[in-house]
Image (cartoon, rainbow over all chains, first blue to last red; front, top):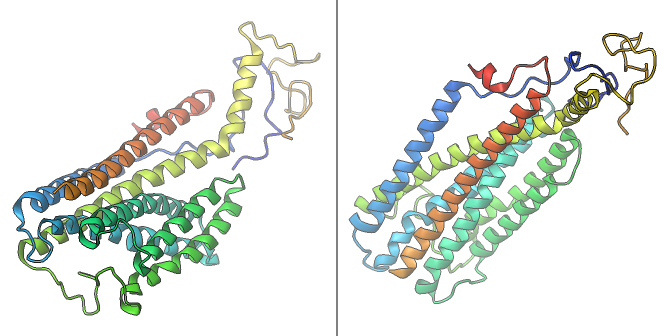
Length: 302
Length: 51
């Protein structure tokens, strides 16, 4: 963070470098990490394509649900990613940020990335569930405990994303975001156990039930598990890319004032090296005797 | 069958659009960083530093 910009001169000849070693080095992604990211992305894409092929064309219709069972190959997968992976990771990362021994903006960025991806998967969960519910239950929506708590979870994490957009110092934003993420995460176990605790319209867990006994078999089970795996990989890929976006955004936000001033300096110098704002007694390097601005003044950031 | 197709199309389209958006955002930000670094004579552009 380079909040102290007072040593940056506003003007000077074009040849004068900007003596500012405090600007963070630009974030560079290593070629190895790019390769890992690409491998995960391609594997996820292939896995999702295979799930769609198996789910729509290969697996047989269900004895009770008929063809509607085909929606089950993606709906629990997106719910797994949203509720358990994304929001669970956001909660753990937020906790690690708040814990003094592990406090680092890495955890804050990871939580933010996980929540954004999780919100997308949560929307997919609600909509795909609703599309399955209409022909099965006869309604697009029911105020069932699991459905309602999942919708509440979406609203809570949308609030988290809105909170992050309020301008603040990175540490302040990270701290209050972490508290909100932990508060929102209270809803995760409520969503999970809602089908056990209350008499809900939503069916019980097919995979993540007590005892972890699969209630689906044969090619249907393999397709369901492949869907889980492929969507998990898609989540990991999105998380990596979104994390990178966060790193770049933070770097630009931390350094934009430095660059704006440097740009202004080069523009103000003009092609002939003259600067209307420069005062008398300007030395050859464009700096005053104390190494400050050309006129000895310091540039203040109000 | 139309419900099934609608479900698959919605989920896949949303995930694909979000993935494209993420890649676009990353490219735009990386370009902004390159441009910002280009204004500083004493730093190496990110593209050169990666080599």
